[in-house]
Image (tube, rainbow, N blue to C red; front, top):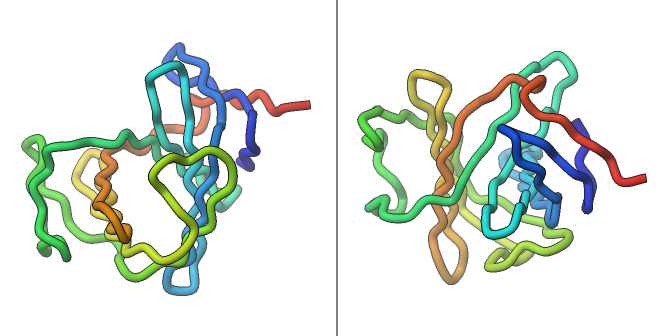
Length: 147
């Protein structure tokens, strides 16, 4: 799945426009998040990086998660226990409209809990952002590319 600016993505009956793309370079790997917007609703999707994978990650920014930085070795959130998947300093590239995110350094921690749910904590120069989401089958997401 390769997303481009202005693509339309349909998920759970809503049509989102891809307004921004973030590319994280972390520990020799590349992770991409696309910022999806439908009115006041903003979601983030991590597109597939391997054609053999049949899942994507869908995130929403959440507030009220009281975490120290760096985060602890396990996190309890909404009745689930999250364990680390990866972490480290990242270099981020920004394309398109991504308010409050800037190209440059960012520390990233990703956690996973049973049920294929995830937390991603990002420490930027001016703030900390927490994303919460789930793994969904790629067939739950339709992409209408911009011609």
